[in-house]
Length: 208
Image (cartoon, rainbow, N blue to C red; front, top):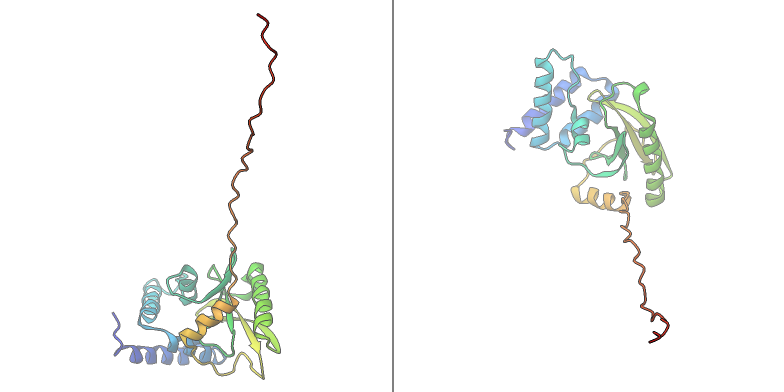
């Protein structure tokens, strides 16, 4: 198990690996993700990477986004459908920066399900209504080999390559409460019971 003392050194090695192997336009985003991980999340990433290497690096192993989808890594989920989930970005560029994560591990834009794009539009509408940004950009990307969709509210001149800062847990909770789509439970209708009032029946008198 990784201790708090070991965590900074392991993160440093992971970031060094990112610097060596990832394209320039992805390095900043992935580095921010690693910096925000706790010890348990880093352990999961290392374990998945070891399994991937042990099997020759050819099989599709569960990435950090797959772990989010499965619930192994807790997240601030806003909404979902059968093909994707919507969650707040833990290292946002701007207030309300969110991610749409397909439930299946897909590695190319062509495989992005239409339901994920529909969810992006739905969440974007809520963010625009609640947070009032000047505009919202919907940007597809790829992290850890998993296609995702960024929903980026623009208040000033933010872009997908702007600086990211880890959000405080209380800030994320507050935003989640504001933006989360509440699933209304259907009221169980009780069967209507027709009450019968007793009426006196008229019977003819018996003739002796």
